Length: 75
Image 1 (cartoon, rainbow, N blue to C red):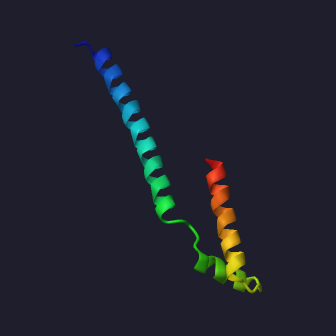
Image 2 (image 1 turned 45 degrees about the horizontal axis):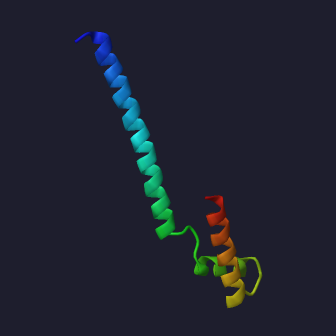
């Protein structure tokens, strides 16, 4: 086989591996963030207390639902 065919094969395989790695990592991170959300109710409660607000359970649920709706709308 000629040298230029080997070079083309190496480039095509390299691009395929790069694309596969990118999409695999993207899927892994989406699943990770779905299973482990970046903020939970306890963190939200602490944040509201630091801002000087008294969080009620109803307000916490409203804020969590709003954050979840916003994340679903982005997809």
